[in-house]
Image 1 (cartoon, rainbow over the protein chains, first blue to last red):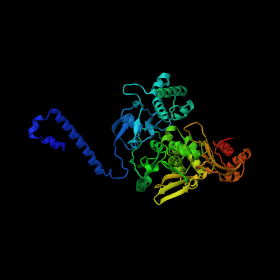
Image 2: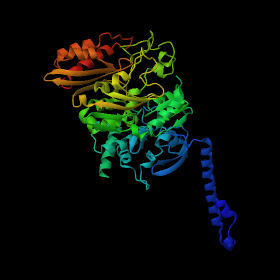
Image 3: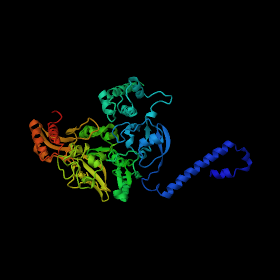
Image 4: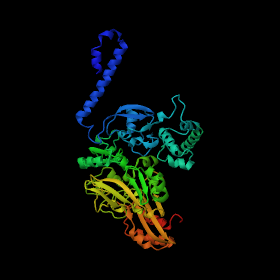
Length: 211
Length: 333
């Protein structure tokens, strides 16, 4: 155990331990004891051995990052994204699988994140609107299409529309306007700006093909 | 109707990885357990706090329930296969085209990406009095709020109503009945295989359920025999909006021709009763007849015999008649 090593340093090199080493060891000791604490708790509950039992502390792959997060059993993905991970680009509109404002990609497929339990996507790749632009700030071609065409009025529905379009274009990169309209028909716009949105998304598809 | 949509009330969640484990969990928790497939029927119940299960058994990790196997005898579709997977499968598209037509007509792209074929056929009624938590017959009470002088019943039943006037909202169900599919159900007493039309129950048999599934039962797969592979198909869904909406009435037909006359046909409508309605009398009447206007007219009139509209759904009678006529005329008509 790290504690023992700390408590009984070898006398021969005791003076060689720098302040930094001590701090590192303390951090390591903390890490060890915190995981053993969790392990002990799950053993006491007997949950780990029951078939299909679920631990609250899980790791999610969001926008290419491994995010450790404590998730309630009944928590929806949009709640985890917005209120636990601070990814508020994903919106909650209707919260009942009607409007599409909460659309995110799960393994490249568009889903309503208001109607997915976070625990069901533990081993999947989640992508939100925050994960589209490159690290240097270059926008995704579909995002650029929105700017090129000034596609939205109030834009509350925009991140959902953009994610639905990015997901649809992975299955059909060169859609007709009618095909794209059908492909993103699971998203609503209260401003009724559909024609302009569709123009922007078609421009995005074109940008993506050129990129 | 309580619309409180912050956090769903707490439940214990189980994510079994095999059908055996899922069935064991169902057996252990009995009526307290809620089986979750895609979840799109469940979330409204949970968020509205109308159903508050203590235990949710999520099937998303059960790999053996997913996927489509095709062989010479037909298809076997795992109950957890998504509607999008059904729509995109090349063999389904080539030989059983009515099923992707029906699956693609359901809901919206995101819902089809998540919603499963097992869930689509097993979904509960969408009557808003019932979904709103009113203590109606279907919810175990002793009144139907839709079938009253002031009840709003535009989307409700015109056939086979018995106290409850809710309808079955599934799009894939009539297509599967037209294809003569068999549903594989596993439960405490083992496995049973039922004809698609026998999977659904009306209120006269069990007013609180839409299907034969009882607590402890699991629909594991749907088998489609090759009998109707490559036949002439017809599917049409009438609804208020072009997407997302449930059917007001839909119709599914599989037709085998002998020369210019109908040799065999299976004809099903949904959205008119608490279960999909197979029109066996019409099937018998059109056998041996050509697919023309005269046959279509006769079939349409026969289909609506016995229809009893409520105050606001009288339009469903001619709608059902006309959809049956179009199914008999076929795609060319």
